[in-house]
Length: 171
Image 1 (cartoon, rainbow, N blue to C red):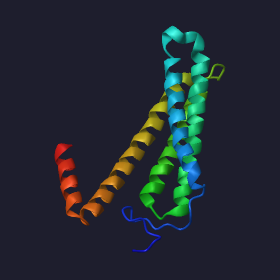
Image 2: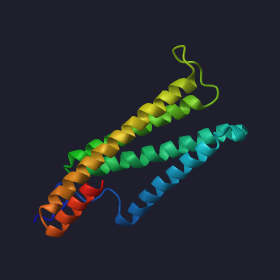
Image 3: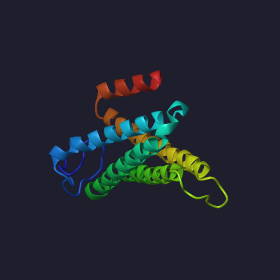
Image 4: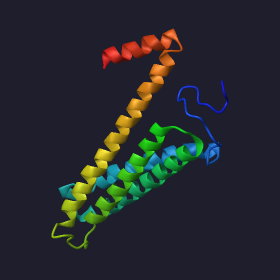
């Protein structure tokens, strides 16, 4: 097997990763931190905590910024290192969804003027809906790709065939 081909993904690698291996775990931690910011921001949107609304917006904004940075890095990494169209499409969907989320968060900040006769929060809510659709579609692309990976792996070994067959029956 060519050392430049990933054994299960079938993607040909072009070059080494853009960042050193020791930095990779920090990318994962950044995703977790962004998720925590989103949860904390959501809690601060509860009516009982109305006086902290602006703080919730900022936590949401920082979480969205981290997601955008990590998603953009992942897209650049995939574009630089593989020919994997699924990975490129999935990461592009995450980047676009993150940008839409940031715009939606900005629309919730106090003092944003009406745009096109609409309340900024209404437009922000639509941004969250559309951004979420991009994230859901990215998950479907990821799932479709994962299914292809398991199908390829199952053709290589009997144990994998049993696992894939069992998984399909249970789900």
